[in-house]
View 1: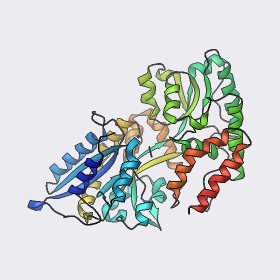
View 2: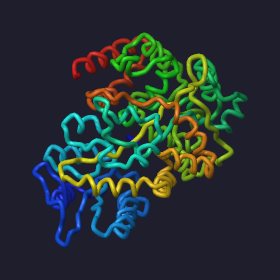
View 3: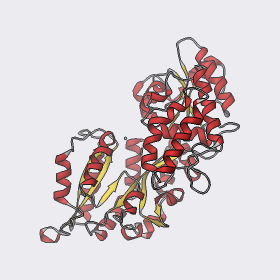
View 4: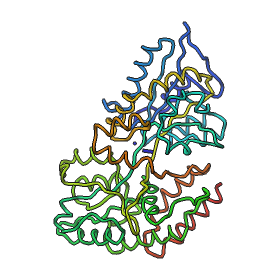
Length: 420
């Protein structure tokens, strides 16, 4: 996933009252008007103008004006509360008609979703960026579509690099040398910020794994968390930590802290996406000329396949509103709404046409968008959700010492195999 409304029990009750549930719901309100329910993650701040509630309500209002027989009821929940609140809703079998935020596999396995072809026109489907296609499938059938995406690269502080008289690294050895040089500068700066805390340890870990031909899975899709290459990767990372070339305690460092430290000008290098840019701008310590973005260094060369992530749209069939959902999704995937969302939250589009338009108008986003077609994503194994939680809370310990990697990654491999 890429970002509290006060929607708790009251919100859940509102959802149930207005829309779909496993117990069934009315397809139409009085007067032939059908109401469908959209539940979405809030990438902004509830109650403010940048809340995703505002974004989606704008689309819902425009859609209703063009389609008076359909009302879209919008509910958003902040990412910080997303898992707890949506889990409670789904355990109570309170399903929306449209969900934005979660991947489709778990719901598809429970036979709760429409196939994508039932709720999105072929024109809209073919406009989706192809690299994410397989990520949406269960048993060869697509049950979801990406709505927003992001790609990762490495940000570096040009001011610190100039003081240290070094160039952006392309290999791990150069990164290690550069990090040591920045640490040696006066001011107590961090050479490389390595956020392996619970917030998003899976992302930082995968960027490093890719640099040594590793991944969470092998070519057949089976978990390979404790592969020889991955163990060697974490042993190298532990060496950086031991040398003091990173912040103290990467295992508890969250991404948001690492990004804020970089924005404050005290970090030489950090992995990031376009969402880091507004944080840099808000901090006011670095101007646009004071930082650069390059491909993440690998063991012997820069990554040619970056980590990219996406948040998805899925459609539940419990309410029986396929036709209304299809009409709304085709409307919501227009370029103008894709670009509006990505400009609001500094993310990237999920459609080819919106990507082309954004690349032409935004040179910074263009750099990240160029990496998306060859991007690598997280696994889609059926048990990825519990494995992900385990990774987020334990993998950071793999860099506590060079000898820790084998044991920590081995325990994760055992958990992944046993929870299948």
